[in-house]
Picture (spheres, rainbow, N blue to C red):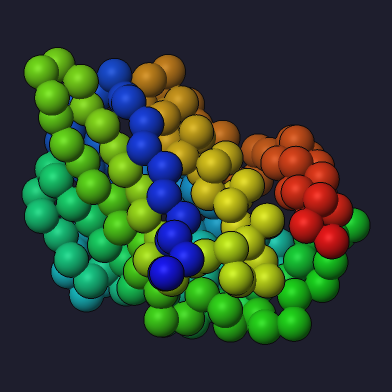
Amino acid sequence: MKTPDYQRSIKIAAAPQDVFNAITQRIPEWWSEAFEGASKELDDVFIVRFGPSFFQMRIANLVKDQKVEWYCMDTHQQAPPGTRPVDNPKEWVGTNVIWNITVQGTETTLTLIHEGLTPAFECWAICEQGWNQTINSLQRLLDKGKGLPFACLSGEFLEQARVQQAMEQ
C-alpha cells in the first residue's frame, strides 16, 4: 500500500481568482519573505529561503483559477535549531506541490497536495508542520489581508514539530 502524500484542504472566504493570484503572485506575503524569481507563468522558476534552507521551484502546470503545480528542482534543507539534523538535504527534489482550487456554491476550497512528501521522509515532522503553518498563513492573507510568512513566524510550529519528532522516536 502506498504511503499517503502530505495533503490538506481548507475553506477560504475568497474568490477562486484571488486564491490563484495569491499562489502565483503573492508568495512573499504568506510563505517566505525571502523570495527570488517569478511564479506567474508556466516554466517560471523561483526560490524561497528559510534561513540557511532553500527550495527552488519551477511552475509545472497552471490552470487559471483552478490549479497551480510546482516541481521542486533543487533544495537544501537544514533542520531548525533543537530538532534532529537532516541527513538528506535534497529530499524534496523531484516532488510536486499541487494547489487545487475548487468552488462549491459560495465556498472556495483550496487543497494542497505535496506529491512525494510522505511520512517516510526524514523531514516529515518539520515539513508537515511547515506546510500546515504555510497554508494557514495563506488563508489568513486571503481572509484577513495579512499572512504570516516565514520572517514573521513565532516558534510555535517548531515546537509542534519537536513534539512530533519525539513521539516518533
